[in-house]
Amino acid sequence: MALLLILQGTPLQAEERQFADIIYTPLSGWDGGRERDGTKVFLSDLPDDRCDICRFYLSGSRAHQGGLASFLDANLTRFEDPGDRDRFTAMGPHSDITIAGHPARMQGYRFGRRALYILIAIDLGDRKSLLGFRGNFYDDDDLREVGDVFASQIAPFFNTLEFVTNPDDLLLPAATPGNMSGVWWGWRQRMMPAIDGTLNLSIDHQVLTFYADGHVYRGASPTGVATMDRDAIAGTFDKNLGVYTHQGARQINITYLDGRRETLNWDRSERKWTDGDILYQEVTPLSDGSPLDGGVSDFSYTGFTPGSGIDGGAASASSTTFFPDGTFTGESFGSVSATFSGGGVTSSNTSNQRGRYEVKDGLLIMTDQTGSTTAEIILETGDGILIGDQFLEQE
Image (cartoon, rainbow, N blue to C red; front, top):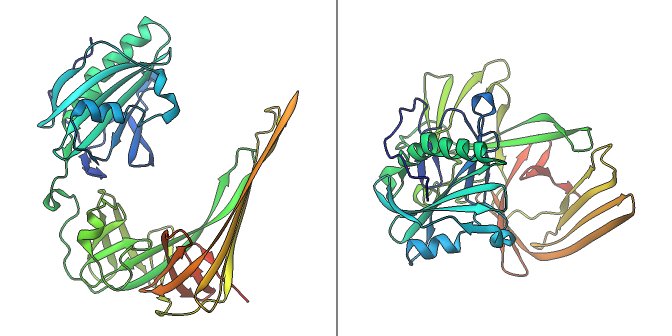
């Protein structure tokens, strides 16, 4: 394989960030995009549209007892649809290399007719991690540009990564006791563009749970609102775990496990904390064992883009009803309909759910008929009982 790693580091100026068990410094000219299924993708934003469809991937490690070859084979479609496995064709022999002090194997692939993949499997002992780079090309000049970008930017960047192997490696600082505790809640309105060209108004609910030991959690902590099990949450590399410190009486600084930083200031006129966008007020979690009598429901519809030649859209609806005896029932429905010149297609599906619920430590814990358990934060606001981001419609 003609593409070889350039292992010298390049100076990077931004703050360190963490994704899963990888610590990195953002690479200039690359936009950190979506996170899905333990993977984070970075998209090219280089000047002059250089390598404009290029991207690279970081993925959290997975337990694997075999060698790098078997791990690479098992994760060949990690960044693509599993059904696309037969589109990968190896380009030349693999290279045994070292990444950030760890043994690694690099293999180049042609993906389809117009894309190049370079995958790097890294040996972390009983766990393995996978890095990836993809570039599209249409001629030899494009292919040379893709290879140059990988060799000059991505390979040196990969070699600057650090991998978390014990709790001391986390970016999250040690917590020191503070004088905040309890649940703080706020909301904002957002106008979200839909694919049919319309703007949809959405309500974005946000929750911050503070602990007297100095920890904070954005959202519903899996360990509840009363006590913080740092080791349990940090062990999953949960980016919503943070620590807070006071700067004077009217400012709180928060650092999250992934390196994000937030500042809250006390709004004296509103008597609430604010991040400049959302006002947070203290709210009361529902008492342990509280019975519920009511339900939550949700509906969404998205139409196809006008002028696309396709009429119709996708709709989804769900509802859950809670009963005072500790049981719940639920149903969900989804459908897609499309009509176009020469034909059309319609599909739909419905599913039903039932089980038991428990209100405990600020969480609504639901266990369905299959034994699967989910948890949402549940609290009382001036407008009623909020479950996650939906208000309970009481009977």
